[in-house]
Structure formats: C-alpha cells, structure tokens
Length: 598
Image 1 (cartoon, helix red, strand yellow):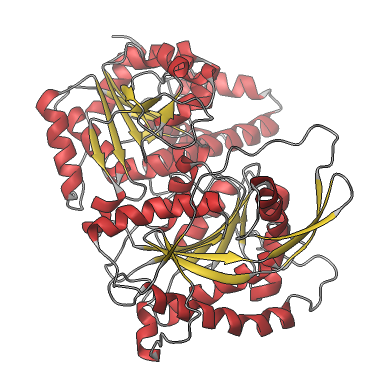
Image 2 (cartoon, one colour; image 1 turned 180 degrees about the horizontal axis):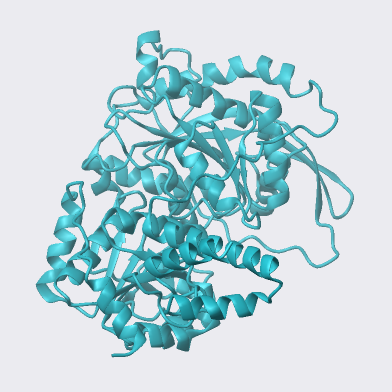
C-alpha cells in the first residue's frame, strides 16, 4: 500500500459525524436529488447565505461514511475561505487541512483531504491531479464561476480534476459565460438575457438544483433587504480643465453619471462621511431597539487606498475605530475571524470579505465601490442577509445611480413575488437601464479630478419603485420605528419617511464631527494578541509543526549542530514522514522527544 492509500485508510478510520443542526428543507431536497442519481458532476446554485457549505460537507460526510469516496478536496477563491471551510468540516468530524501547499507532495496523514485555492491549483495542476486520483475523491469547487476568471484557471481545474471520481460545483447565482470560455464540469444553456449584451455572453449555467433568494426569503433562511439610496451633487474637473457639477441621480449622460459616482466615492468629499454616519445610526438602532445587540456593518471600498481613507473617516465620524481588512495583510484572516465573533461595529474592506465570508451578525452594508457586476452585487449583498432570527432585517446604503438601482430592483422583484408590499399611492417608476462596463483611463492621462461631493437621502427602493417619503403626509409612530424594513409592517413610504427624518438629524452631528481634529493620523484598531489556535485537529497540527521547528532550533543551538542534522536524528528516533506531511500523533511524539533533548 502506497503512502497516499495508507494516509486515506488512516483518515477513513475516523467516521465523520453527522451535522448537529437539522438540515434545511432545501439542503435535504438537494441531497435527495443527488443521491437519486449519484452523478459524477452536480451543480448547486443557492443564494448567498442559504448554507451551501453545510450542504456540501453533509454530502461529503455521507459519501465518506458509505466509502463511496475516501478523500475530499475543496477548491475555493481565497485563503481565508480555506480556514472557514476547514472549521466547518471539523464541526462535522471531517479533517480537512487548509495549510497544504504545493511544496508538500502527499496529503498529510490523519486528514481526510484538504482545502486549496484556484490559484494554487493553477500553480501545479498535475500535483493536484495525482492527489485527486490516488484514491476515490470528491472535489468540491466552491464559487465555481471563479474558474472563469482566467483561461488558465479553467484549464488547470480540468487538468487537475478531469479524472476525479466525483465533482460538486457550487455558486451563489447563475453566471453567464462566453461560448469559447466554458468552465469545466458546468452544463450550459442558451442565454435568453435581453439586457446589455456588450460582454458577448451567450451561455448561462444550468444547475442541477437551484435555491433562489425568493425561496430563501419565504423559508426565513435569509433576511429581507431595504435598499436606501443616497444622492448628492458632485463637482469635478474634467480632462479639459473644466469644472463640472452633476447630481448622482439626475446625471444626463452615462459618462457624466460615472464621473459623478466616482467623485462621490472620493474620501475628500462629504458624501462618504454622510453615508457612514447614516450607517452608524442604523447599527445603533439595530443594537438598541432592533433586537440585534451585536449588529455590525461592512463598508466595501474599490481599492486599498480608499479603504484606508474610509477607515479614518469612520473613526472621525463615529468616534470608534473600525476593523480594516486588506488582502495583503498577513493578519487579514485573523481580523475577519475576530470581527465575525467580536463586538466591533464596522469593518472596512475591499473584495476579500465580499464573497463566501461568513459574518452572520453583519446586517448593514455601505456600497462605496465602483464594482457593479450582477454576480459581485449578489455576493456582496449576501454578506448581510444570512438570517439568525425571523425579526432581523438587512439595510444596504448605496449611491443613487442607475447601475446599482437596477441590480437592487432585481432582488426586490424576486422578494415581492413572495411578500407583496403594502399599497403606495402614485409610485414613480425608475429608469433602470444598466450602464456599460466602466472604461479604464489611458495610462498617464488624467480624465478627471474630484473636487467635492455632498450627500442626501434620496429614496427607499422597493419593488423597483422609488419611495422618497417627502410628501409629509406619511406619519411614523415612535413605537413603529422598530419595524423599519420588515415588509408588510411599514409601507415603503413610511420607511422612506423615517430614513429621511433621520438623515436630517444626522447633518448637524456630521458637521460637528467631521471637521474636528482633522490633523494628523488617527489610530485604527490595535493589533490583538494572537488567539489560541488549539482545539481543532488541523489547527493542532499547524501549531505542533511550528513548535517542533522551534524546539529543533533550540536543540541545534544547545548542541552546536545544524538544524538538518537534528531533523534527521529526530526522524530516526520517531519514524514517519517529514514534519510538513506528518500526522498529529507523530508530531506530538517528536515534540516530546525534543523536550528530552533539552
């Protein structure tokens, strides 16, 4: 028996546990559909927050128990999601290693598989192919649309997993693909999309099981969403040196709208601090009166420079430091975990928290980014819709520009199929035609310079219709304010009236705070001591490897011998593979042996 087979046999000796929480109706139905045919390939499209991870790992546990597979490999978009998948697997008794690198050949002993990323697979597809075919393997491709981010990634997963025993593909929303860029293991059908087809997409993914937002809302699996749009007047200088002013919601042309949007998002203007103050007010209301004492908010920035600037604005406007989460920060995963389980009010981030990252207490989102694709919008809004109780709602603050209003209206349309809103008089429909993709600036050519932008509440978007709450005839009793955003309890006009009144109340507070002490650098969140990583099997192994290396260094220093010599003697004393591939039991034995040498 080879090392891969032996490793799989040892891992298989530990039977996975069944989930301690009852499966949701859709998860059970999807499992039954899968088991009816036991297919080689299976695609599940489930709205963000519905529980795709639990479904996939429950299926994996069943296949492992029945010995239909002996290994599970999860491929996900980011390094942080590797940790999230490994933790979720541990809760079901499946040991998946999130730290296995391309430099380590075999799958580590004592595990039932590992979690990797699309980028890592693209680095050495044949290595992953060897791991996936050494034993019968279930490959879970999380957010499989990422395989279309580059042709090399799609080719890599086909090369790596083309001969795997089973493949399960997951995505949060149907995705379109160009005919010559099909993603492997996904079935397609002709795309009937009648909107802007500038991207040339001609095929749409066809799922074997679909669970949409409207079904999840009806089942109380996700929260209902209130979209609060904020307009404002932006002033900028164009490439000809002319100063231009335009309203976000009333821009005459698409190019002017885009320039106004970008100017509004500039940290030097007043649009950003105003919306951050409105967001903070909403979080306070949820914590003190809305039954969510741990409610939190997310701010999505376009890039890291904007994220840093927004974090300083949060500190000035709210008086509290946010969690700043940047992809190149080695402590980013720690910060996400700390924010998810802690009490911080706001996190500022770019893209890494917008897809798949699980922060159930986040109920407010501020859209301060120029991203506007349907897939990204659905995934980002999905970060604040995961339901924990039936009374919880989500609020999304966004610029009042047509591309975002169109995306928000599509979610509202689905919602109203389940829960029609109360009647409103004389609604005024919006022009929701999508804008073309944003054109990039030519290298070295300055197309515009942001000068200033203000902000004011525009409307609540409900059912594709704007409700401004400005007629003065819609009263909201104080005892009804707790029901902000719950469809059927407050009309859209009442919700808009309430937000408009709060928006007016914020103006004095913003004016007082945003200009106070605006000199020098303000501190952000202090670094916290690292949390104890013990307690989970894959975390135990990672910590043990670090401890063994520290002890080897101490022994080498004490005996004046090279580290390599100490490692060689250690492997003779405690036989087994190198530490990078060794099991927890072998690592513990080596640790004890090293301690006797000191």
